[in-house]
Length: 213
Image (cartoon, rainbow, N blue to C red; front, top):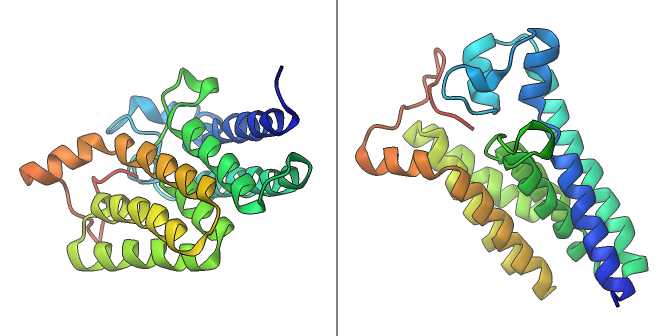
């Protein structure tokens, strides 16, 4: 028989997954342009591919959906931690793990979503401001100095896990952070291949980038 704590853990992950499955790029492209972003460019349902394909119109919808779903899920996760009998940081990371999983493999869109950077970046702030500073700091530094958005994204995902391991005492939160980072990094596997081969496109600060988030 399932214990009460296990039930709360399962509920938190499921809520995070269902909320995470709402994809801002897909919602904006279908409702604003009556098209599916996954049929254009790289086929990635992310912010950069959306901007490259449709420009700035609808961009705020993409950002708002992906940020707000993560905020909502993690707040619910924190609220359920008390009744579940575990630390709020664990509740936050349970929901955050669900969001990352849902963003990359959304149940509403045939399990084909984005790469989880906006969701993961928001999760970093929700778990602890120090984690947010570390993750976003390394992202911005690498993007500015290398012009590779994908490299910054990969480093930010790794930093999310590392910073949680440093600043958050709960062992379960550390494990969940590692799993969340692994999902985001795996979603960037094609970017990793292009980085290794030297064929990854750089960000053009004066124009549009071919690099996907």
